[in-house]
Amino acid sequence: MKLINITLTIFLLLTISAIITLTEFSKNPDIKNFYFKNIEFPDNYSEREKTHMQEVKDLVNFALFLTLIALITSIILLKYEKPNLKTIGKALTIIPIISTLAIIILPYQWVHDAIHLLIFKTDTWLLPANSTLIQTYPLNYFKEKYLLINIITIILGIILFFIKKKDNWVQKHHMHLML
Image (spheres, rainbow, N blue to C red):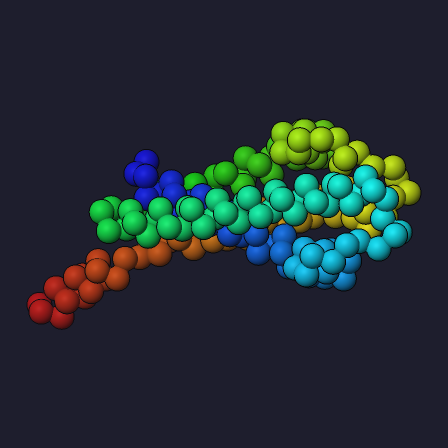
């Protein structure tokens, strides 16, 4: 696969995830204030929850940085390579299908825990069932967002896969009109 296809695929995957994540952050006033305005969490959040949310914030900011790097790299590469929308569309369809199959085949709790073990430096994500964050965001909430990201990505992948290049359309119709 060409480098331009890889960078554009990464950019699109990260962008979809970022849009969903930041939209969800904006729905909760406490998280919205913390993430967007740097206002501390209220006292009904434990220190462990506050530490975890700082880790989440750092992770989201790092993902946004990677999104920007993928965008800049893609823009530079576009000067030298032509992207293949079918290839990008296939990747944006296959990756979330495999990802979705993982949570169908494996228990979601296991997938959730594995993801958290991979992306977080500490175990502050392990919170008591009565914590504010767990009460506000139960496990099923994350499963729904995971599936939403995958569905949107699959739809975008299918659209990109079936986009016809304007050049080909013009050439075919131009030849037809000339006959």
